[in-house]
Image 1 (cartoon, rainbow, N blue to C red):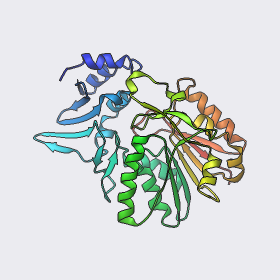
Image 2: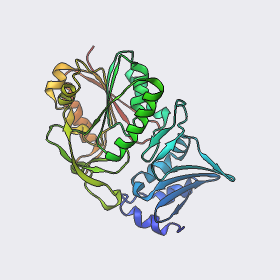
Image 3: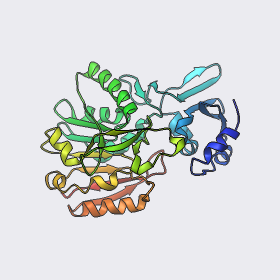
Image 4: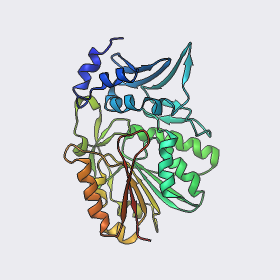
Length: 315
């Protein structure tokens, strides 16, 4: 393995984050090979794929948060959490079955923030926009029950493969189904070019561009407005939306037809795009939802420097 020189080259693509200096200050050693990157903190090793360099800086800052999200493998005197390739992990706090992650795990204690806000009850209808591995959808389904509905929407083909594995396991054990829609949420139904990266950061090419280090595979996929999704699934109402769609939140809440019919609670993880800052995207969301008398609150997100944006409908 080669130390630092490979990492330093990759940082030029990673917005020049001073990650090596931050790692050293936090007692973390970075060791890179051609295929993966290891963060070593004492006897603990967290492994990433090189193609997920975009997450490196955040994981350095929140090493314990990500390391403790799943049960580590124990080898000799080392504990290893390996996110370098798609695989099953035992998620801390979820005991029903292993969860297959395309890359980095979703910690349960982060998802709990969604649940605290949503206050879901039996028979509720939930849209999980940007479902990633499907774990959040599973937790939502546990709360809404057999008579409730969860629609998981995901646009990344590699993530879809993981969701299908997890939903199949879940159904085999609980006899409860979760609907899955392969496509991107957008402000039209004409399809978009999408960069599939097998990660939580996959998004439309118009949002993320095609920088070399991301390693995405571009393809044309279906796109859906909120109102089209409601029609597709024959929903009479929507009670809660979780929205983590990597910048597309800037446009999807323009949908007058949807909000004239449904005014759900919404929680959003807003993101910067190559065209627009996160702050401007939040202002756009507020403009779109204020028309329907929504109220707003921003809270810190556990394990991330990106706050969550809570949107409360009128009572």
